[in-house]
Image (cartoon, rainbow, N blue to C red; front, side):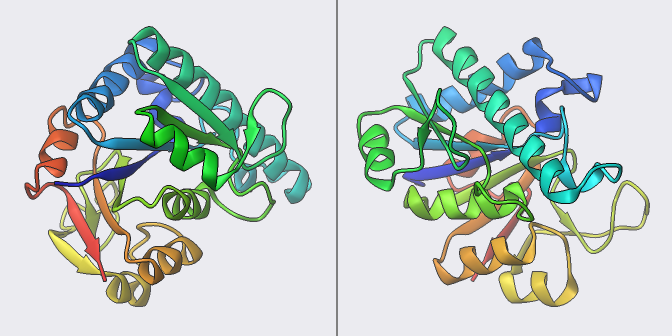
Length: 231
């Protein structure tokens, strides 16, 4: 059984079917599923994106560095929203941020371990704290800091495909694929720097559909769900 997991949530996932902003009913459903594995003894950390508000690389009208900082602030907002949702579900939550900001602690590995050991859900915002890096890289770094066995990336598709299944009806999904193959074939699981961090630290990645209501528990119990990326 997996002991420590980092869950990667996109900003868009917090928007539900709205496409942008926040869908609290949808978030509540997702958080209840995460709470279920947490209540079964799994140490849980979460990294959230900011695409429901703004993704820096997509803001072509802005200076890229400025846009990235705005995007990082969006992830901080999402992390605070998630904290509120989990708290209302009865969970103890601890927030940290890669971006230095007064209302949240800066990244501190000792405090991460302490919070996880005390049974708190740890939620990270602020990405890496530096522009030009994606929240994928932030997730890989926070997985390393949390001593996670696995990253579970919740997406709008069922796993990793040989090509975009939203565009190609003949796309084939992998059950398992190695880090080397993902990098060589540019399968787009996470960006290159994130993949290298996970490979070097032997952190498995499982990619699955966010709307699969039993996926998290099945993954924790060792069942085959989505696509497993391994060393």
